[in-house]
Image 1 (cartoon, one colour):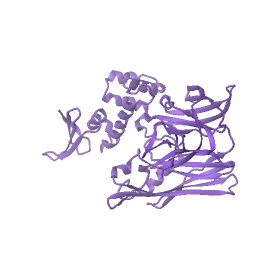
Image 2 (cartoon, one colour):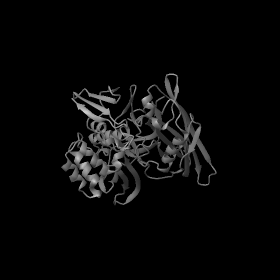
Image 3 (cartoon, rainbow, N blue to C red):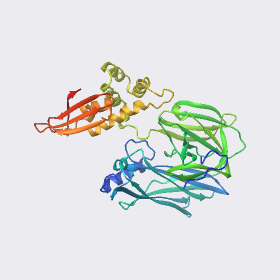
Image 4 (cartoon, one colour):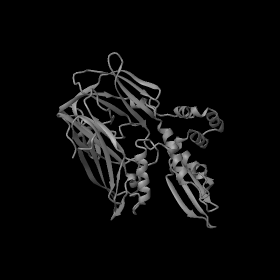
Length: 435
């Protein structure tokens, strides 16, 4: 069930039908544990974050998680695809004398096979534990019930200590609507800010409910993106709750904090380190919160900016590409982003959706059109057309009179058709007709 909003407070704020290979599953979990919140592209991983907030004479710790569907093992079940998992945490004090546990077990049932491979659809949950003042170790435990495998991930340290300010909370800027209720949903990307065209807000809870503003210095890499006072706020005790597959914030009169809201900041941020510093009246740092701006599902080719520039030859004149390649390697990223900026339909934000779409197409082409001779799919005729025009409206495969495999692609919106043939039988389809 969903949480109910409090009074006037505006917040309530399968891979296949057959099991995946166990070896692959363990490798993917190991990668997640070894590189938590690393921003590695195309590797299924669990996002998780911890928030400690005042509760009675102690603290309540909320451990939220977000699992992409392509991380789970789905099995065919009649007409559906079913995954089953458990997620838990073990919390112990510094002497390991006191151990507390919380866990949840879930079934995920999907009708659409394609969705089982989605990196954009998630299973979300939150666990909570009440703690006394102190420092604790938290061990997350993920179990995939379909392959009977339990994996304890890397231990994390949390502090349930008295402080003037608490860990910032990254939320969706747009309200999450469920039924006739409006909520504020947790972004739930490991406590980091997604680099995306979707806007996000940042909430900074303060212990002193009387104060009317806080002084902030916010840096994104080497750039200062905010230096001044934040005044917009509301007073409420924040609680995390599950609501229709999302994690939302709800407000309470009890255990209230003063919650300062930073709106519109995410649009000014580039991918990279983000540091939020709370300053006193003399501009000295009271507390510093290191975060990151991460690009979920970042196109893999953008890991290599030289290669990303070379892909532009599919749509751009050679002299333009050569000009970008003539830059020093340290300036490739800046030059590439500068090139795409003039085509940005959202120039007031740092994220460029057109650039992201182009390189997602390049990623798809590289993998799906690679030949048996190991030629990159980007260099093939099909790859070049796909990068330039995207997914065709219709695609038909047939056999020619001499037994060669052919493909016909139709782009209905622009009235173009392309025909390809695999002359050598090695998966390299040559363009033979454009009309």
